[in-house]
Image (tube, rainbow, N blue to C red; front, side):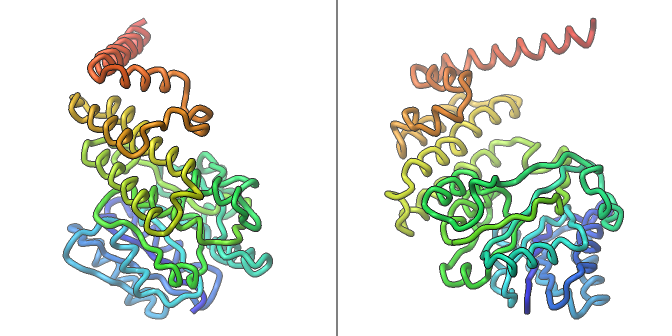
Length: 353
């Protein structure tokens, strides 16, 4: 089998989301591939939709189902166990791809000898029949360039460091299956943000990364998606993902060689991103949770504010507020809540003007 495409599915039946995804996959222009759709204990009729595709496309579609929700990481792991392809791809079940998506990525791999190949993607706010997206993908949404030229080609130590810091999305890549199997690569289970951990760890095992410089993947944005709805549970899952990343780097012998990169990646996602998204996105943020975030990052990386990446990539305002929290969690909490209140009042006044 040339390619296995793994599709984790949880409650995606509404509005034709799952159908749009599956239609784009069953109509790929390559031969000799399989679609492994993993029903992650859906409570809607997603499983019935998948069974219909399995019946209509028995040579392409294979459905795996179970009764306990394992989140996307667990579903992907189940798909990896079943996959027989020489290459592995992943796709979120509310997204879709152009019909020549996998043909172009596999062609690039064959031409270059790469063991990981990616592309760019479009951010879209409505589901469009995949066939309509072929002529001009960028006309349907904002094109996002994923991974830069300084991360592609033969991967030396410096490029591996850049990929560890900014691995980019895993769903817009294909991976050589032998690398995955030989190194026991998998995903954290039962948490959101599993790619925050897996993307960095996986990137260190591939030796040649190439890109197709086209937006071939359509990433559906909606108000209830993981990245747009903030809860304490999701914040804690990002924290767990970073703790797993720290543990994986220790077990796999990466702590010393990639210490600076790990320190910044951990501080950025465990603490900085989580802190400000929590304060902005949760109606009644808890001071105790804000304190827990600070104490957690300082326990692993007490000197993270001296990290060169932190100084370079973290905004000046964020650095100032984080320095304030270092002095007093309560002062930070009060000042940032006041800052948000002032911002809301200004918006309200502008609307009334």
